[in-house]
Amino acid sequence: MKEKKQHTRDSHQECHHKWQARIQVAEDTIQEQHLVIEALVEEKASLLQTIQCLQEDNGAPAPLDDEWEEEPEEDPEEEVLEDNPLGEGEIVEK
Image 1 (cartoon, helix red, strand yellow):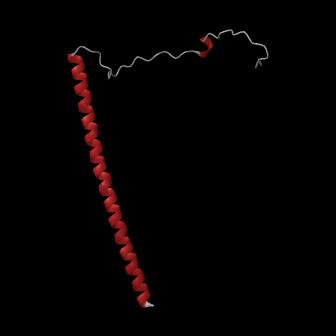
Image 2 (image 1 turned 60 degrees about the vertical axis):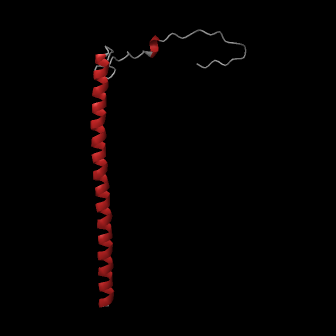
Image 3 (image 1 turned 90 degrees about the horizontal axis):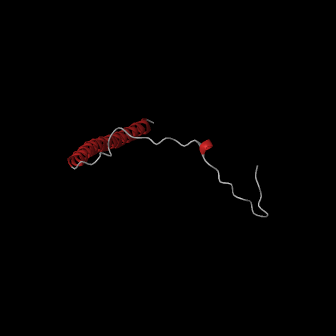
């Protein structure tokens, strides 16, 4: 009975170490991905700044401007419906 308990403990300990190793690998991967994302975000900001500077140098309007001109939404009641004459045999839905 003692051998079985010891074997169970050893097996449990080995499993625990394997899971800890997997968790550590996953955490390392997440940390690496986080660093890559941060670098990409910084690169994007730098590129956007470069584009904006080039556009200003060339006198072009900056499309990346924070002030967006929003188009007014169309009111469906204001839409003009065309009067199409009904052909023979057409069904009219009311």
